[in-house]
Image 1: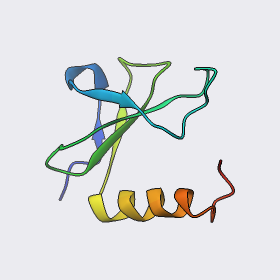
Image 2: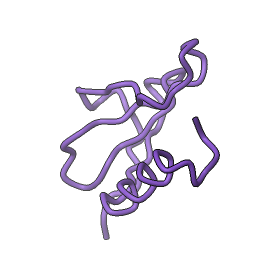
Image 3: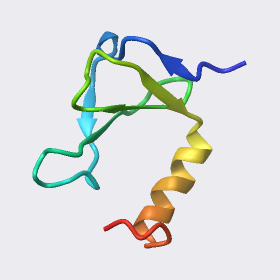
Length: 74
């Protein structure tokens, strides 16, 4: 079974703000690239909190849906 959560997201380095996050800095999603078990995702307001690990294929489909406007996110 693959890892699904990381209890302390701050234990990982390399977090970057998603290019689709709020430009005001209030609603920021951060991700880590190159993680072997998928894409870790966390809320920037709680960097020491948990992160979810999204399987690579699912993360890629989500990003493509956002880019394509399927989810209504701009």
